[in-house]
Length: 70
Image (cartoon, rainbow, N blue to C red; front, side, top):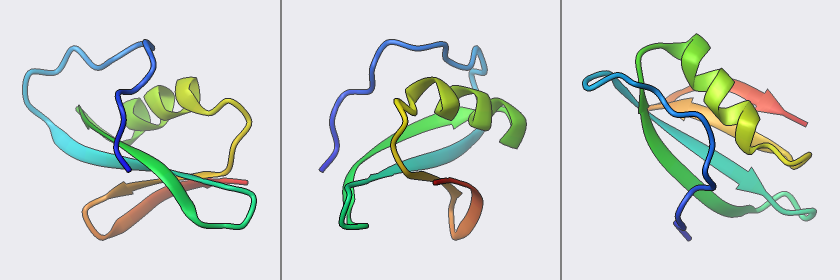
């Protein structure tokens, strides 16, 4: 399920919060996910948007959904 993320801007934070970005297929099922560290939600959203490629996705920080892209 996990694969290497594409080359996109990353956080320069050495420490931070772990986020998980889920990508969904047309059937609404999780297709793959990327985990990364970011300083805050705003930076995590910026990084996630670079990976979007027009797909539905959700950004989570632990059990909190930060953002959903439809």
